[in-house]
Length: 128
Length: 300
Image 1 (cartoon, rainbow over the protein chains, first blue to last red):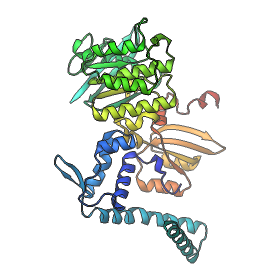
Image 2: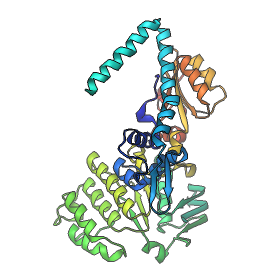
Image 3: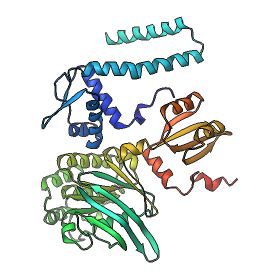
Image 4: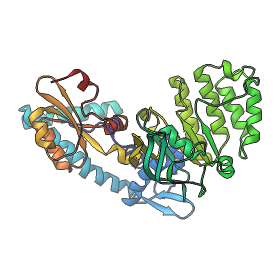
């Protein structure tokens, strides 16, 4: 098991990641209101306290700010914070795992690079 | 604010301790799952909270009052289980109509809509309903009563999977719109954990755990692989479960008190690092035996 199984990831983390992806993709813009804990609870069929925990992760990392009585809003820097965080925390780790597995299988640098290039090309074609 | 507070709560039936020195509190407007093996004392606890039974010793407070024979407590709570006494001569529509007069915040419209949704036949007598239909009908009363304290004691007995799913969703939706304190005992923790805020686990009349669900999910970790390797990583850890399989492999569940690098090392040493579901964890935490049912068959 290299990557952690999403299904077994705590729900509040899944919620936080889902919200991050919403912000990253531009579905919720800067200074726009994000879903409330109650909306998230109803959407994902979870306890509102769990949803609040997910929202608080984003607030703690300065992706959201609170307006008293109005709810939580997306900060102007949110998308950039998420990009940096995911690159540093996720992508780097995955690349390290990838390299380790490649080493175990005696894959050469060029072979690995080719595989990455091929995968990128495939995903570009899929997006077209 | 705490809706329920218990301190040193003890209940004896003759010489048998059903509850032993139980202390916990439940905050207002939370959904708590009450879990534990058969005979753990779940129903006894719920009946004491509801004021149906009197404690033997200790303190129990519900809405700051002593619940036993207390009108104020009983006016503010609804207790749903599969032993509800319903009049034998009334059909279920008549029962539903009468139920409204017992509950101050009874919502007639919700009751009717649920009644239609689950396609219950209004002319049927309660005693002629199937086990699952009885549970469905009871659940409708429990939700529509909108009581400040709503207690469900194994409400899903006999319900099929789709009705159970609808019920959990209905409970959550109505709770979001009309927050109230809910206690819910069940053997199906994996089905209900998403809508819970906290879990109270009983075993042999004692509190084993009382935690937010999110903490319960990270309470333990499973390691699987060659026995000597697993042992190396779990030497100083608290073992909750140990299962053998194959010739020299083993699955061990321990308290999650490793740091990330230790887990990474375990993975690199070829061990599988597995999360432990809350339902399995509760079984392990309340088992008398670390090897489970297999211990009965493996006498070595």
